[in-house]
Image 1: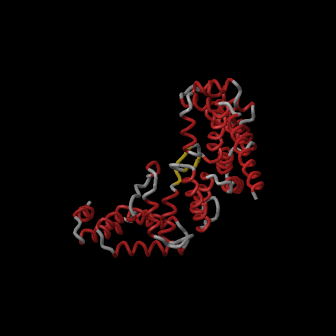
Image 2: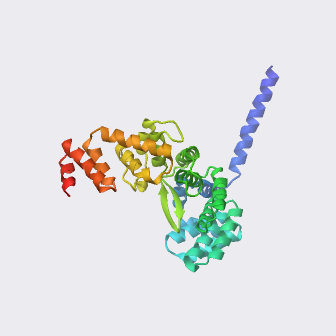
Image 3: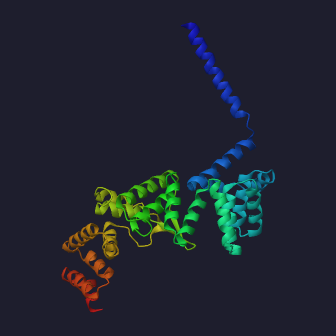
Amino acid sequence: MKNTTKIFTALFISAVISGGVYYTQFTPEQREIRQLEKNVQLVRDYDDEEAWKALEQVPHERLRLLAEKGNAAAQYQLGVYYDSKDKKALAETWFKKAAEQHFAMAYRQLALIEARKHDNQQKYIEFLKQAYQLGDKGSQMLLAVNALEEDDKLTALMLVEEVAQQDYAWAQAQLGQWYFDGNVASRDWKKAFYWFNKAYANSKIYHQDGVYQVARGQSRPIIIQRELAILYLLGIGTAKNEDKAVALLAEIPEIAQEEDIATLSDLKIYIVGMKDKIDDPLVQDKIEQLEEEMVASKEPKILILLGEKESDQSKAKVYFGEACDAGSQKGCDNIES
């Protein structure tokens, strides 16, 4: 027994020493490079905001030194730095150097340069495909956007589904939005909930303030929390849960506050405004029921909001009239205006 204990002790000490030797064999510069490459990869694979912030803190002088020594991640990040300082020629130079080493994200940046600077669609697509083949998820999404703009919905859907399976929040949110809206894929509330929920979870893991979609060269936020709150409140695609809807509303990032939806009443008004845009009879019935409940509450604020959102002026005046009867001067004033 004593001999066995001695053997295990010796093995443990050996493992600790070996681990220490393994760690210390890296110079400070090598450890710095490993951290740089790790953060760049986190940005590439997950759009990790914390990794992005860490990269922004690396002094450009240090990046330049590492880039001159031939490190592709440093060359790419130096290009990002110069691009942020509007030094486009220098940025392009370093992106090209990184691309020569088959650095995926450098090809994506070169594609964007071709689109911005030269308006060269052929080169833009060529560079995106090179980045995609090297595993760049952002480039795969841009190829999906391009396919959609060419009205090739099937290719767009296949590209986005593939990268969504790899826990890429942008793709998951985009897929959720397509199933929610029913304009690229057939509307499917369960799939919409599934992908929005996945995107929501991954946006938490990777510290994302917002997830964006791109269309016709413009980006706008996909408001994951709002869409999930709608599904929870109506009980479509998932079980009805008003508490979860309220909690999600509190998490909507400031950058995504397009519709000024801060309270449950705001969300209900927003949902009522969706009724004519959704051709699903079951959902329309749920929205009508929600509207009836809101009117029955006789709350002046809600009645006024319903009136302000109503496109039918005669119906709007009915809401304002009920608000007026409930003691709201604003409701009375709106009847006359």
